[in-house]
Image (cartoon, rainbow, N blue to C red):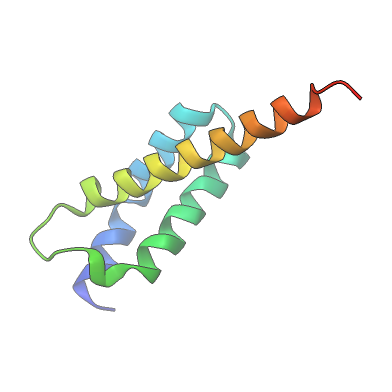
Length: 83
């Protein structure tokens, strides 16, 4: 395993805590962590060596969380439309 992947894996406990603080639901938080790790591994070349993996991963997670909340809000608004 290369150094970048090892650095990412070492951040998983912190990612879980952050995700749980955002979502207040363990299962949803674990899904968010998984999505974050998947995106990070796909875009591993975007991470600059020397940059904090924590900052990079938390940015990814924050953006995924915002996207998820937007989807929820859109679905909520759509169900409130009169028929």
